[in-house]
Length: 456
Image 1 (tube, rainbow, N blue to C red):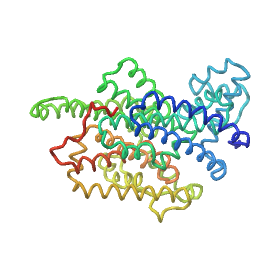
Image 2: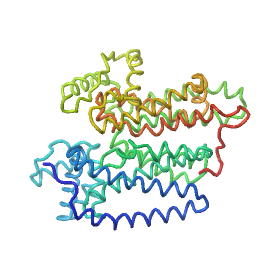
Image 3: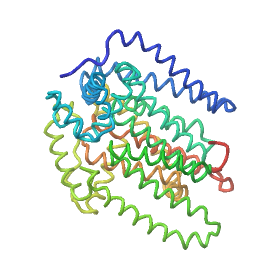
Image 4: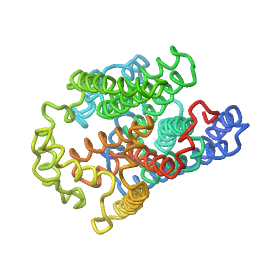
């Protein structure tokens, strides 16, 4: 059953909540950025843009899409909220395993969406909806704003972490992390993606706090574990791709901390070996949580998804694209990697657009492709790769973007779905290009960045 997301009363109470959220944002702006007017302006601008994006997403979903996963999440979250009002002991289900909520549905004789809520990933947005509904009377448009602002906290944390290392790129990096249209729109929804993006930001910021700003290990460690656990339950493959990037970032940081160039050259192969072993151990440990992304049956799942999307091409608006035959070997995966990564970051092309949403996605992809080609030409290709392996933050961005982009691209041969799934890695990909271009055009006598500056 499709339930309406909004009604006229929602528009009446929206200004009240926007005023409350604005007062909170204004407090943080004054408390943390009073001495930095440019950052203060960007913070408040980013806040309002995310608010606008949440309202826009709600209206487009209700009046244009009229269907989608967000309806299912809202329907099930509303049920849990309603049942908790009826019996306060049901509040425990918000913090219980997903299977317990499925049992509660059976107890209430609810036959809708069988099996959908049994997945931990699907149940996470339902938890958030039920929990935050106590603050907003279960109004979808307010929930969308809350989800959007949570993702904004994460994006802001990522942005400030990058500015800490590259203070000269404050405005450019704001474009990458705060103002990309696709990330704004899909990251302002009542879906899984805003939750994961928000948590990614808190994880990265906490690592920077520990390693560079020398802040509390305990506090930041708890944040890393809690945010990591939420992503693990919601979309484990995002966490795995990000951890791979973090491991390589940490290896690069350790390399930079070795003062002697000779010792660095001797130690770096050891660091790379340890890093590779750590990544292999990580992938082996979380095979079950990775689901369709698990290495054991990755190729089979790719083949199944291809057939499934091809069969439902009409239902998907004709947005299916072919990857080709998949050889499950490492060599076979590497052969299709360029085609897959191109699809993730640079498609759909303009002539592949089948509706207005795909057209907007195609325009953004065209701009991104143009910027990527311009950067590679400007850096004469080889300097681009030198920058990636000499700058830990660029290496983190590159690794996460490519690993994540490949994973979602090869398992989601449908532009309509892919343009939502890929948004966690797009800001990192754009930031990588911005930083590489910046460093590549600096005279060699000028340091690329100044870690430990007051940019944080």
